[in-house]
Image (cartoon, rainbow over all chains, first blue to last red; front, side, top):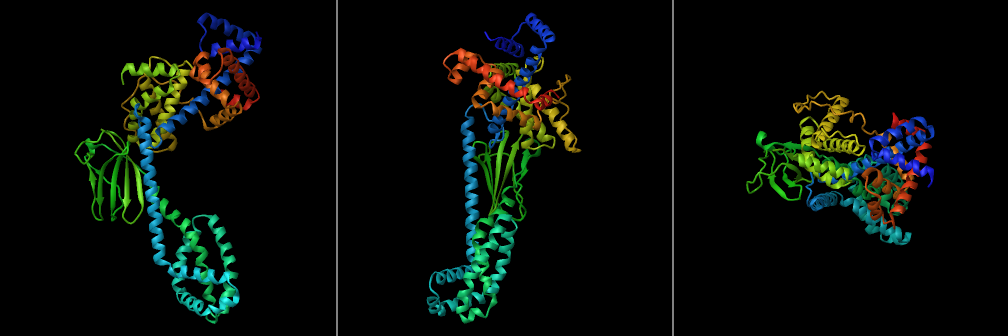
Length: 316
Length: 192
């Protein structure tokens, strides 16, 4: 047999604590007297340590997986199930809240920005046609561009917040924006020069500016608004026997719905709150049953939009 | 936690049944650790992190044969977690009074807290283990960390015979030993 293999086996048995006391002493004597065995031993010892630590790191990762989402003691039976339930519940909450955001934002935009949309249709329709056709429709186009230029004051009022919002979040949208503006300007100008009303108003570029802005608003705007509300997760603890009641941590002077969800995804408490009041929870569910100690999630859905959530640990 | 639970955890870890050991620890020890940390100005995430590090320390002690059986497993994990948390609070320089220090174990836990693995070490270790490949990593985890027999490894890895498992085990370890020898920095890091 390969002598290196034999030494390896010996070292292995020593490191794994599989040698009896007498054998151990012999091996240690060998280590002390034989430098080549000692060198091999040290390298192998470190290799063992590397394997140990690596496995421990894997163990930590496993624990993180076990605890993530659930956040606390997964019971030994049905761990996967409740964990999945919670994942679904969380996923659902996120979906609903983001949908709600998207929707509320869109409707708000539609109310505020009809002139912007108008200017889009004007520009895009003639730009595909010949100049002569564009001048033929100039009566129509002229009217609406006038309308657009009239409302340009209004547009300008709306535009600044739109611009400031899109410019703040990231450099990437900033970089794209001027590019689009440049692309749009040469397209917009030749058309408008055909219409006498438009040519006299240098302001006419103003409606063109908000337009590149518009597609940028949809992906850009929810970003700065949403995380501010969404990521406010806080961990609370509540000891019903000592504290009696837990004051629900929603923002003052707001209206909305407050829910407490158990680890397995069951809503144990729900109430609507309105401005000027403080609601409290005594730790019992609707049937008056005291909720067991453990980890819960609270969810605040504000009527004006925005969701906050966090954890509540009940200690009994 | 009963002494029987304690023994169960210990044997589970020794036999390489890590999952069942973890489940027991989640059930019996995690709530206590969490309770302690939450009451001492920590949050949920910090409690989880400290608990995980304390469990790592327990496994390290047991797997390397250094675990002194005069400690109860649950008390050991809790004490390590408490010490880790006190250390962390000191580092953070939070002048928060610690409330729950009444739970004082007279025996001092050996230097497990000092032995905690650093970010630097864990990165070096992970990169080394990535170099020997997935199969070797898995095999060595079974043979060295879990300490399960070649026969079981044979089944788990799908080898045709115990000898094949032994040969692979030897080759994988030699691969790692060679890498370690070529890496004096890591040796210094792990020894230091």
